Figure 1 (spheres, rainbow, N blue to C red):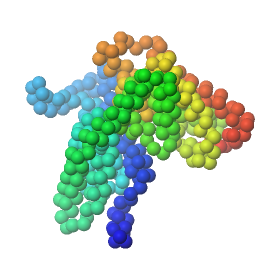
Figure 2 (figure 1 turned 90 degrees about the horizontal axis):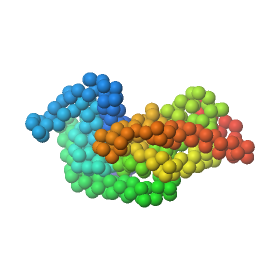
Figure 3 (figure 1 turned 120 degrees about the vertical axis):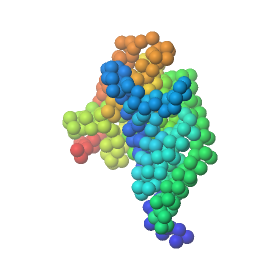
Figure 4 (figure 1 turned 180 degrees about the vertical axis):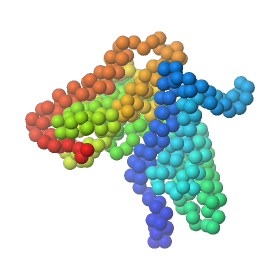
Length: 368
């Protein structure tokens, strides 16, 4: 057993929930962002602003009616599986040969996983990366052994578990979305609060939303919850962090407050209560849906990705004929839910907490 432990330490193989479900999931979200999400944004910019090189077909695969044509954005989106797998491998400290071998593994797994492909990629990429790390540089023909073992183990694992995992993830996501349509008030609160909390915790709300395929009304509630955390912390901590903190939290991440939350959990009350209010407002009053890329549901105001996701969803609905046009009410709901209400509610809720001494001087201070 000691020899096995020594081997695992030497190979940097650590069976840890933190490494697999925090580090790997956070990296997976970055892979999603750099492929699927960026591709969606580029396609939207090209279409809306009539930018020729973004709407031109640059690659055609196949011939005749079966040909698949890609724009720049389309190619980015098509690489979502490899992007996630490589990002996960990097988070697990995979050596270069293993890392590059994860490219075909990610592509195959995402395809086999169907609608729940992102979650399947998470599990399969972890398996393939750890097995690849185990054999890396153990033979004199490493240049052949490492990629072959990594690819075969990864695609073999994908053949066994990708479809069931993808189906299960998709089913859970559909159940949440169905429940939100059925009970928009209560589910609006639950989804908004849970996804918002996940955004501030050192886990990836974006990866969770992507893995579950969370869109529609539930996606809108998730956007509301994430915005409440980011904008809420940014505004309520303005006296401590000024403009730098406003930008870092409002357009970056509320995760910056995690250290302060550990020291004083009460500072989490205002944005969390705000999310419990804005969630049902989004689902019941404005019926705000997020029908863009599912990863956008968990991004909040980070780079305005959540808002871009809502907008691209509007465009997709119009193209599909399920929405007539983007209305003034749509824009009003987006602005109120994502920016105005989180700011006002979090600030107002924080005032009595400061007066009671629950939030003390510099409890929200960041080292910027």
